Amino acid sequence: MSPVCPGRSSVLRIDLGAIRANYRAIAERGAPAACGAVVKADAYGLGIAQVAPALAREGCRIFFVAQLCEAPPLRRALGGEGEIFVLNGVDPGGEEACAEQGFVPVLNAPGQVERWRATARALGRRLPAALQADSGMSRLGLDIGDLAGLAADADLRRELDLRLLLSHLACADEPEHAANARQLERFAAARALFPDVAASIANSGGTALPVRFRLDVLRPGVALFGVQAGPAMPPPRPVAALHARVLQIRAIAAGEGVGYGLDYVADSPRRLATVGIGYGDGWPRSLGGVGAAFLDGVRLPIVGRISMDSLTVDISALAPEALAEGDFVELLGPHQSLADVAREAGTIPYEILTRLGPRHLRVHVEDDLPGDAP
Ligand SMILES: *Cc1c(COP(=O)(O)O)cnc(C)c1O
Image (cartoon, rainbow, N blue to C red; front, side, top):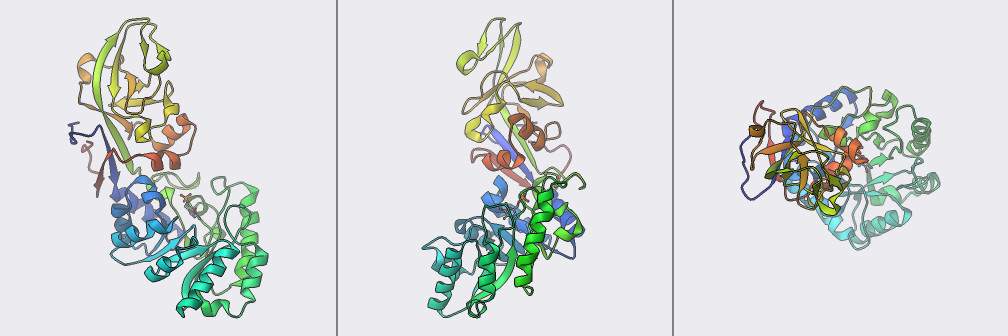
């Protein structure tokens, strides 16, 4: 592995070909439902400017972001194509910008519906909108009573062009959980109020549930980016590889401590490498004394606490010439998956991905060519 990024200590390699393959697999399995893509939080930290066009090349036409501020960069990335839904809806004061640019807010609360309808009346034209039903997660969405009132309001459809009715599953990653069927049933009652509007309930986990959860539009996010949607699903292609540079190599004697607090004290002579990635880069501090880096499949345990800009691994298992200052070690890759890291860090892959910070050199590649790790 040769250093490719003077001035940066880590390289995040994003395989757009793998994202496309993952999208294709979900879309084909989910047909005839249309397959959208959730690309909030900068496409889960992987770069919306590159990820969105890759999905569009696979035929994706429906995109979801969380906030209005994420929509214009997405539209630019897509060259003006595609329909962009804003999951958090429209904030007070954001209505005009949202309307002007043609983004579709997901209206979650009665107040949001009211403000968006008032905007439509003020502008004198119908505005596009989606409605979210709360089917039991108690996070965002209108309850069935609100929805019934809206369905009975003859003015609603004159003011709003309803593009989607959606709801979100609390336990989609647990296929056997009773809440899934219960939420689908409650959502059916909401759908019955708007029978002509396309419906959507399946996030990544939902795409792995029985066919009746697919409805008209799928909304996968994390499964596009290399995380298995459910036990029934074929494993996705890994998308992100992360390598960081060795800053310094040293040998320490028994009894010497390592890092802040000297949490780790060597019980025998050890060889150590200090690696240029830390919690300031989104590498979880909880991996101190728990996680590892890898070199050619050899596990290099993290010793001591993780610093903001570095961590220290024990390289005693390597031949002395196997690793030199300036070389790169693997944090995410063939020997350590996103799921492995999340488990060891006591979190979920979503959090690992979305915290990967701006200091990593992001390299987007179209296809996974063997042997071209950084
Ligand atoms: C984030 C989100 C998704 C995507 O979820 P994944 O589990 O990443 O597939 C879908 N729908 C809504 C409403 C979301 O907030």
